[in-house]
Length: 541
Ligand code: SF4
Image (tube, rainbow, N blue to C red; front, side, top):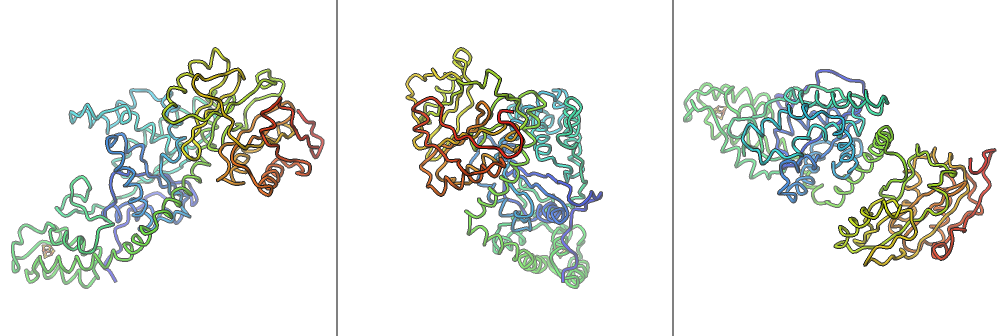
């Protein structure tokens, strides 16, 4: 039995169980045992009672480490391993990488519009950088760091952020930005985040300063037993105790602090007595503590080694977390876009074109009558910038909408535009995407609007993710048309897809079938499979 549990960061105010907690860390280096005892233990404790979002904030890391992106990416997996080995359960909490949910950047850009520059100018991190005469490092990313931080928290509807007392200024700024947004747009899209003060215990490093990556005085969680023992033997000790026989002051010695964490109670008492009497020498004392430290860390390091042997699984777990996070992020961003007047028309998601549920499209609207076309163009990656510039330049005069690029399998890029069918891109032949399908459904638009668009896109993608490049949903008079682009789908995949869509729209699947888009592309869009809708709703309503 050890004399004391590892020092746990105390939560001083207890919010209701199930509240959503958000916290992030910059992946600037693997975690050390000081962070494990002081911060990770608190996260594991929070995980027991709250809906935790634990984020590896790589965009934030780029504000200072932009010249070394490879280090950031390498550290992401290392910290994910540290966190999981230290007790974070990625199936219980939402563990993810910030840039895997890029919606946060758009949200931060929108929050920038309502954030006074004067607030950001007072940001302590930015001021410190300036005061240290590091003007070259005071980039715009660092200046707007608090806005991205606010976006991180509010995008996931975070209710609570665990912070140390030195981070209160940042959190107050996030609260002010959130309150300003909610006051202006008058819709409670996200809560104003509260915070939990965590009393972070001070863990000394090898040199008796606070253990820190930047001081080079840390023992990493991933370190080997040999390296751990070797570092312990180099640890600072009471300078008044020069040799065995000299009485020491254990309360001033980091080795004794560590004994308090990793050694049995009786050993701690013996060390205290031996040190103060002089009977115990520092070399023996360190050797004993090092051995106990290695034993204390062994279960965590075993878990870490096992996980490290399965990097694909770790990536999959991070992907799982990102998917969970993205569902919330999309919903928040959709509402934010809506109140800021940006939800008019289609937008691009991973699944292709999406219909915002609140979109006010109307089959009577000339914008959506006839003449609505999409071009799916394959463009070599090197030509993308040139083509993008051309499309943006031409969009107004040719009256089409440029929806963006969508990367698909095999490094191909698809440009999605809609509008004028006479569009031509110099030097880029328009190419159909090979096999594809359409399903026209005459169904009240309200029926589709009520559905979360992600459900529709997901139903299509789930059918056979390896074979579907892109999907689209667009209104036609009195109904919608789903477009599916990709390799040939088997008859059973087609049946499955039709069944899923019909179930989502609460219409019978009988009589519905996908139509190969070769036939559709060849002529006017006249291929449709009207269905009778249950109930009394009139098609085209
Ligand atoms: Fe520190 Fe142990 Fe030396 Fe005392 S005997 S000064 S506790 S290392």
